[in-house]
Length: 223
Ligand code: ADP
Ligand code: ADP
Image 1 (cartoon, rainbow, N blue to C red):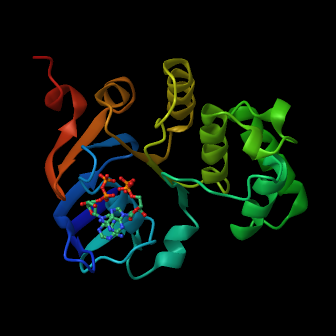
Image 2: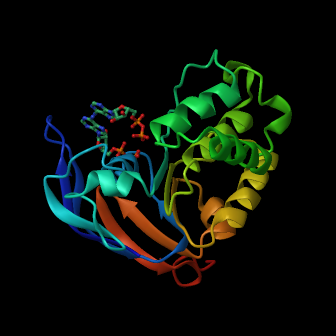
């Protein structure tokens, strides 16, 4: 359970990106749906401890996220919207570097984990190719593989379907459904179909405020 209370964040230029956000999110797939500029990225970066709120509390299970960012990081996988990493390196080598950054130092279990993530994200055949040669869908799947290193209990993904064609989006959807057990997967999107196909629970955000949240059947009724 992720619990957000009275979270507010104003940028240096005076933009109020988050205004008194209150949210209780259950495990499973949760969608954060809102138009560009609504505050999705700001909220996700704040949840991932990459940005500091002006006020408010975030609790993930027994972790006080704002007071114990290091404790959260061990349970967190994060896919930023713009994922820039030394693209000349091969997919496998990049994952090895990222595994070390996550503290996965044991070579045998590291290899085992990387092999199974490559398999899961369907990248085994291209594991030794440079990420710079990857298509948008392959890059996105690589981004998911790196976010899943260390088996995080909280997975935050900022617009993971951005730039994907329908077939790639479908593949990504199946992958996410398969890994969603025992995790809270929060994904942001401005595409309503992503939510309908994928997320039983949704929060609608606009102008830095949560407009509504709840079970998707109750919020996204057909007109
Ligand atoms: P979304 O992800 O929903 O598009 P963002 O969180 O990126 O929304 O942005 C929320 C608001 O904050 C927007 O008005 C955006 O222009 C503004 N914003 C985002 N980042 C910054 C920043 N670093 N400095 C100032 N304003 C920002
Ligand atoms: P997103 O919607 O995912 O935040 P944006 O294109 O709005 O993507 O933002 C891309 C980057 O630019 C982010 O790092 C964001 O913080 C920054 N940014 C967005 N709006 C502003 C702004 N008004 N002033 C300064 N930086 C901004």
